[in-house]
Length: 169
Image (cartoon, rainbow, N blue to C red):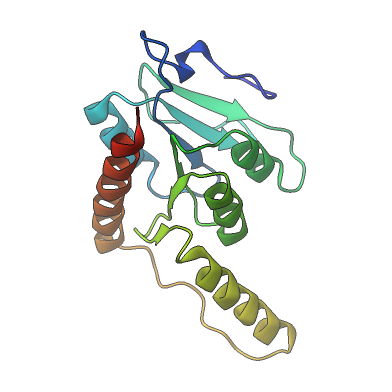
């Protein structure tokens, strides 16, 4: 477990090249085990970020980054520590927007890939739903999380990891 803005030596491989890694906004994330399976298969490091201690899947290159219990502390840590070699797993649209701006690939737990082309629309939809709720109008919440969401997530992870691997020098 780490805290603060420490970066591990494992950010680079034996030749000194930047390693691809996965960063997970762990609070309430329903696909931590799926992330672990993908990461183990591809031998990728994973940072699970949360504002409290939590159990994470076991893996030799998995770690939990506990941030202070402040508003958006986990989001801030993730946004400040991601780059073009980072795949971020989060369902938070404003965080996804910040990560995309930093060059990261973002996948939400339901398998939606958020990139430069899609994150703006996702933000607009989120803002519209917030505005409608503020006006007292009924809005539908997210559908229950199902097995097909897990499958869609795994497919999306494979797609974005292929993109990131092709970018690696």
